[in-house]
Length: 219
Image: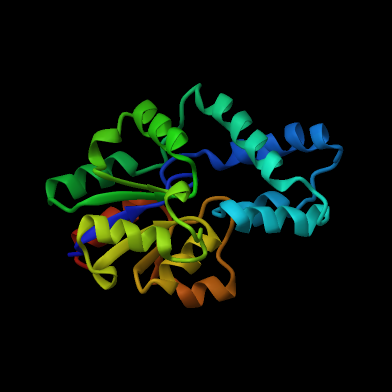
């Protein structure tokens, strides 16, 4: 059995990734960009901070006010999230299984703390998590493994015996780079050939993650 489980949040626990996609055509015209580059939303998934700014500028040009754009993106998504979140299939069952087996759990998300707390509370699952690490807590966002490393340190677990659950490509890259047991549960983006070489396993949903843990096939 693994020593601890580290959860990404958006797209892994909750069906929130479409909200970020919906926010782009609201925000970009405010800054004089009437069209959203087709690949921009997917490129930004799982990123934060300077990584996100570089991605935005790579699509819109070096003069694009990326920090201000990202502030507005978070404002728009925050409004949408206030209405509540939809849990991904198997989330409640996986959390209950881990709690019953006294396996510590952490959140390692690129989202800011206020959004993480709001989503967890709205979904009624805040009590499962003693450890929450946000993109605001680290200097190097995903695909750097720092957010997962900090999570493992706080849980007191060995990365090689800690399970990272991710839906994004950058998240899988981060888990693999940190030497974690890395399972991808795809949401809006299918794994590429590169990603298939990096992850430990791919699961169709969180039910399958629970079943594999129960069978001792992870860790």
